[in-house]
Length: 322
Ligand SMILES: C[S@@+](CC[C@H](N)C(=O)[O-])C[C@H]1O[C@@H](n2cnc3c(N)ncnc32)[C@H](O)[C@@H]1O
Image: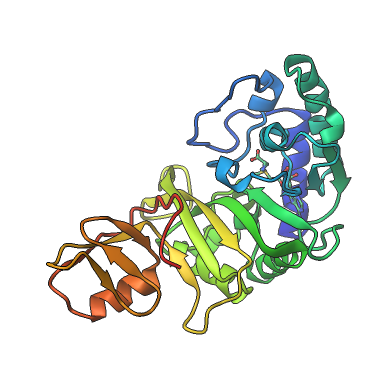
């Protein structure tokens, strides 16, 4: 059986018998005025982090969500969208589609504004999306792509890129790991399916996105996720796994390379009112400006003693230089 088949089996089981501990989400379940998340959805929260960010959701975007789980994030997206078929949900596991369908019917009883018809559920595979080219404003996946091996991950990212409109955004949450994982862990299909042994270092994860053509990357959050210890897993050393929230925007890649925002800022504190680097960045005196890592390096290379560059916070929240 391939790891993709094992993954389907794991999530068929998780659809038939909800498993609260299956994924170790570090996010509290957030609710908004008028938004109630049914318990059955909360019990099937198999993600890590959140892909729902209000600032992505202005102007009634057409939304695609791949790997629906119990449907919680689709309901949260629908809260902002509220249109018939405004959120397309795709999953390869029939039982998961059925479970989320039931959860949406329950959500209707608890949310006066919500109708199940806001969500268009379709059977489909992340590697062959049944969605037209250039038709989506916001695409999302939470805790699915980390399961995929490199070639499959490339296909899944290329599919997201294909269906997004120009300047559309792919919002994702996934585990990442900076330590090497041994082959026993990597090849354990069940651990991989459980989002525990497929994760990449953050830089490699981002490179997969920029190699696919995304010109702007935003690292929005980075948090502790799980530990693999030698008592419970096939490892001699303790392995620390984090989860990240990332947006990849379908902007053209600039000639000098993609803009990757990791939460750095520049502050000019010289004698003038501002500093202009003549490359499109004006630093007003004593006002932090968010900068991408490329600009941070370029400003550092100037070796000026009146510009401070802060470290990455991995909590980029909009604004900035590019
Ligand atoms: C870890 S769960 C995450 C569910 C949901 N995103 C959440 O945050 O709760 C992975 C989801 O992806 C689905 N899935 C697995 N393989 C898939 C594939 N090849 N294509 C599309 N969906 C897939 C599973 O059925 C499951 O719903």
